[in-house]
Structures are given as C-alpha cells and as structure tokens.
Image: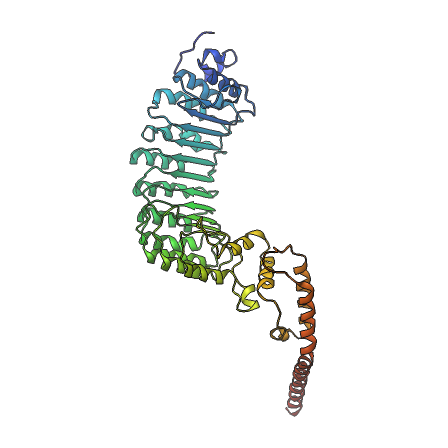
Length: 477
C-alpha cells in the first residue's frame, strides 16, 4: 500500500503534476474501485460505461460501478474521466445523502470531458439543483452530450429552474433525448424546463411522464411543437394531470408535428380527460400531416369507453400510418367495426382501400382481429397485403366494372395475378388458385368483348361525328 493522498481541493495543475506517478492503491481502498480507476486512467475503450452508486453490483474485471469513498478518490476519478476520451455514458444512482464536498471535486474533473454522450441521474439527492449548476461547464460547452435522463429525483422548484438554466445554456445545441420522468415536478416548473428545450433543434425524444403537467405546461409544449425547429419522434406525457383544456391546446400542434411517430398519454392521472377530449385527440389520425405509428392511451386500466373507442376506430378509416394502438378492452361491436376497416369485403376496390397498416391493439385477446393484424404485420409492402385480402375474400373477379379501361383491362388483370403468384401467401383457410382465376378473367373478358367492342366503336364514331361537325361549323364561319 502506498501513501494516501488527502488533498481534497487540488487544482488541475496539482492533479497534472501527480497523475503519472500516483497509483490507484494510493487513491481507493476498495478493490473494485481500483479496477475502475485503473481502467479509466489507462484511457482504453473497455470502459465506455460508468455507474456511480452506493453499492457494488458486480466484481472483478467486469466491474463498471464505482462507490465513492470520499472527496479525495472522487476528485481523482473526475480527473481521469476529464482526461478520458472513451467514457460515453455516466450514471448516478441511489444517493440519499450525497454531499457537495464529495461530489464537487469529481464534477470539476467531469466538466473537462469531451466524450460523454449520456448523463443519467436516478433515485438520488440532486442537492436542490446545485448539481446542475456545478455541471454548468459540461452543459454549456459539450459538443457530444446527446441524452439526459432524470428519474425518481426530488427537489424544490428552484432546483428544477437550475436544471432549466443548464438545458438552455448548451452552446452546441447537441441534446437529442431528454427524459425527466417520475419526478412529480409541478406544472409551473415544467413550463421553464419545456421552454429551455426549444433551443435544441436535434431534439427527437421527450419523456415527461409521471409529473404534474397541466394546462400551462401543455401550452408551453404546444409552442415548442409549433414554433421551434425541434422535430420530435417520441413524446411521452403519460400519468400527468392533463385535462380537456390541455388536449385542446396540444391537438393542433400534434396534427402538424410531421416527425412525431410515438405519443403516449397513459391514463393513471390523466383521468381529467373526458370523452370530448379523447374524441378531439382522435382527430389527429385524420390529419394528412400526422405520421404517428404508435399511440398509447392505456397501461393496465383506463377510462376509455365504447364511445371513445368508436371515435378512434372511425378516425382510422383513412389513416395509412398508425401501426400500434393501445386503447384497452373493446366490445364485440367495436371490434366488428374495426374489422371492416381493416378488411372491407363489400367490393374489390373497398378491400384494396382498407387499412393495411394497423398491427396491434393492446394486450387483450381479440380473436376477431388477430388474423388481420398478423397479415398486416407480415408484409412491409402494403400492396401485397391488399392482394392477399382480395384473393382471400373475392373468389371470382367480375370483369364488367373494369371495362371502363377498355382493352387494357385484360393485360392489367393478368399482370396483377402474375404478381400475386410470386407472393408467399399464408395457407390458412383459403387457396389463392391463381391459375383458375386467370382463366376465369380471360373467359369473362372474351364473353364481354362483343359488348366492349360495340361500346368502344360507338364512342369512336360519336367522336368522329363531333370532329366533322366542328369542321363544318368552322367552314361556315
């Protein structure tokens, strides 16, 4: 064992002077801590993830967690991280009594790091927000910080405002994901946090679940969606305090949020949303600008009844993007209505124009819909889904409705059947019978050809008469 270094307030020059000669045995007493220190000091690629927490969860060479011993070892850990260009992800976990004296020398070193892409704070004391002030240089100057997660952390309004200041200070606007969930943040504090997000044009992922988002927060979020350069792909607002007024504010912005693919509004605390609010939300599906592929309204329970479910089902008639809808239990009548939207068998054209994208409707067992979901899920090319549904539900093609295409109709039908023959069709309950269908189509065409010929010839003669009459009138003039 070498000498123990106790200089808790060393500056960078002092660290630099001792860095080459100091041994990890002089810094930490715990063997796992020494392994982590040695690895980070060597600046190798093997340690791109580091957990700072109050207990070791793994041992030996595989150890990626560090348990603070005091200001001295944390100062050196921070210094080595500051010099390291391989550490990417930094996690802080389960500190109830983290002191400023312990964390300050550590953060002083971390602020000089140029490689960290992800910061995660979970279940810990954030020193009333002072930790964000101490991390100010990292937030302000980092060109790599892309993701920030804060969960199950509690501090006063002033602390969340310090976080908002840190988020708004980033010169390089590098953040792509912000998760500030399960913290019970009041609505007025969320307004400041959401406003600070607007400077980040690369922001694609926002998770504000399990807080107290209400009307003012929804207004700030609507402004963010409408007026900033941010193009979100994912938005989680589940288990907040959103009501109908909040939905009224959000829906116009959501309709025009072109990049948004996933929206979560799970309703443990969003129970102030009435049928009117849910029906308003369903209107998003009818917007040509909406690119939602996932909408989650429930987790386990919900207050969504058949009237609301019917509104969502009706809105899906012309939607060609949504794949996953978590909406809770549906009655058989609603399932039957959705079944017709997924596969309308009233005509070939109606079947072709049915919804071929919806793949999932929550965990409840829906025997009536599962085969259609499975079919939509199986094929990326939705034209192939339409072909299979047509073959499945229309045994014989009536050629007469297609005679408006005149003599082009037969090659088109034959080519369509040729394409159908190349598709791997599920063999459950029907045979495609491509050969007989082709022969039937040819037979119907030949049988209807005299009528088709007469109609075509009459139209040609009528057109010739019109041309001759126009020429006669021109000569008379």
